[in-house]
Length: 433
Image (cartoon, rainbow, N blue to C red; front, side, top):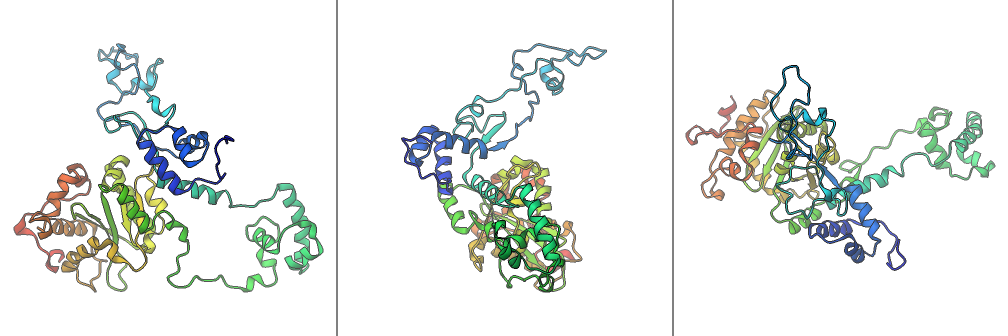
């Protein structure tokens, strides 16, 4: 670090990363960003390159990625027996067959700023893009920080020496505390030896310890969150901060609707605040894997970019089915597809829109109804009738009509939704009988 910058030698905070993101959006150079954060410019450069998010190239109607595609006049690069008269630049196979192929790469991602945040052509550009986002970058940093502290902090030679000393003594009935009192050269605590035994690093096992096999695993108190770290950067306060910075963000609220006691199947509901459109998906159980399967299916239908456009920000409660946000946020190809935030405990009013919209479900399936006899076809049928009902809050329009304008017909088709004529709408239990 430069001696001229009075830095504190500490890690970047989430506020620092938010400032970096907003500065990159304004095309501020690394030197100016570093001056404000009291960091070396190389620190900002490394941060951006390490945590930037890749967005794949859009090959729609333009499969050729060669930089020479506008000037090249080659034909029949494939050496077909019957020569092809079409120019090779109009064929996707040109990228693999041509020996003079050079991929078209934006210079902004090769040199500073290494990202496309401030590029005025970002929306129209079809080339591979990189973006820097503060919240996903901070989560990735926190995850890496935790992973770096997991494992055994001892060399292989020292571990072998410890094993040769500790294992025979434990087999003689001695406890780790007794061993350390007699062999202070080990230079660790009794808890460390217990951890090594638990991890299987030593030849001795838990069953060889006198008392440990008698103790049952402690159960967390009811309602206790096992890993509160998942809420860091995802709280309702963080969600409000995001909306202050980006007020036009399309927010989607997420929840589940349970059937009667003993019913295994549940409804996963997704509610678009801007149009009041609600999607309903029938899950076989209330597990995290079932929710992720729905997300993966939607991503395959919409593409990763399409999923991000439809579901940029999702607000959910702290139910057990949503307790693996990293898996839900990460797409099939490992690309971040959305950002998930959580309401405060016992604060369902923070996502009042979806709670209010659940009343329409209860018109057809009153409390105490079982969902086990239903299929996804029934869930989609129910969603179609609810979304086709006119609302006074929408000035007489219905959610389906508004969603066509705000979300787009491509997404509506991917959701398998259709409009129900006004006279055919049925919001009584007879709809699914």
